[in-house]
Image (tube, rainbow, N blue to C red; front, side, top):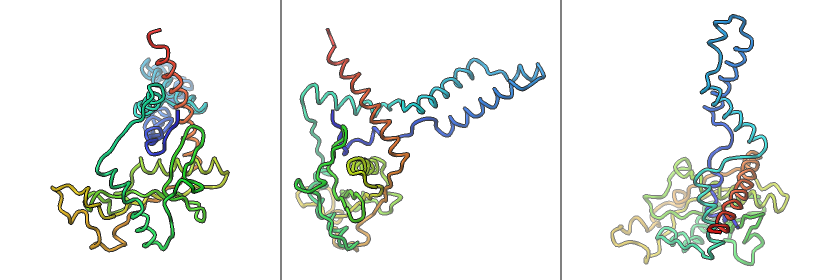
Length: 274
């Protein structure tokens, strides 16, 4: 099984361990139990005793904390679906296909979007090609193809081409997309693990590149897709990405959980009807 960076986000979305509300609840239950143990008045002590429901919740929350300390996490349904799809592709021997006008445009104008970035920020970035050093990253079971790897800045930069002017995220707070951010964090994680160097920072940049004429639907006005009348500084929105130590721990826990789940699911399929 190989995990691919372009759709890996479901594996990493969400947090491990207790949520803030769960942590607060555990703290409250722990304090109540401590008060119960130290209270000398029998009537007050009886009122402080945890109910069966409280004890069950206390045990559940403590178990989450314990499992996290041992690197054990429960995958989300989205992550399990993703892993099942990877195993299905491997065992049933097929490659999934997907296409849309948005993805077609993204593939066709990727170079144009990088050129826009270069013009605005005075860079000379090039799209990674098969003969480039970092064209394909491989670490463990993850494989990916980053858009731009800048060794000078120690940054990975990923280009996203907006479908039209209306869908283009105008400000960074509008542009934040956890799926895209985790894709860049995965590239940074892979580079750090592969090279031993501190690849910690990256960017996702959203660009307004002209839509190829053949992709523009008849019902959409050309003004949505011709970008030359927009000032250059307004045609790019950049979201900064940082890979932290906590991110790395989180990713490694999830990758381990994914491999375990994949092995169990694969075993179920191989032994079905036997």
